[in-house]
Length: 268
Image 1 (cartoon, one colour):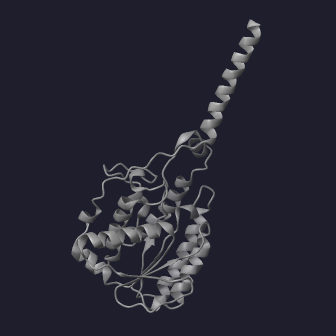
Image 2 (cartoon, helix red, strand yellow):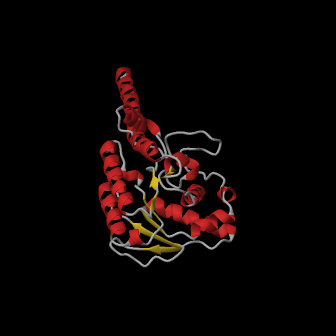
Image 3 (spheres, one colour):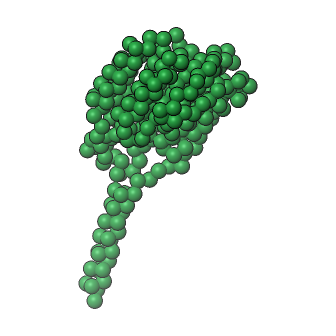
């Protein structure tokens, strides 16, 4: 009888250990994100905001781009400065662009960055390139993952932009690094890193190409901003205090990105 009880006890311990291992491997814990203090409005002047608002801009993006535009509206509101005239256009639609117009388009389908590039080029060549002062397209974090061929993606991006810059010399094409996500968290994420399935590491390989090719004055380094904590610590991942869900920007992150966007628009 005692032997049978011992067998049952050992079996329960083994099941408990197996359960704990399974839990650690397949349940990927996510923290509750606490927003960092938002002092972004103090980092930009009325004059900088006014100068940016006078420009004619075309911005191709998806959800993180929407975060940035929300940050712009917030920053302009806090300063009491008139914001640009935001105009959302569908792919293939070319609105008339007046002074201070900020035309933006949900540029395509996530996970398909080449399609986004094609859509952006078509919009520029379809009439926006003859009207705007600044144009840019931003990939989403989900467009660059661990198995993406970032060398090929960057080459396609650069060839497209080189051709557009040659054909539209009056447009300043701004370039944007691929955004990051938070993490890793839990055993599962760390195992993925060890075996080379690290999304952020591959995004930063793509971003290294962008930094080398475009550098200061031409590059909105969104990934660098996302990975820099308020105390100056820099990691190759989205700082949790700037995020609402581990991938998108909360009000603090969006406002900080908006300030950098404004500054980039004002570069000459």
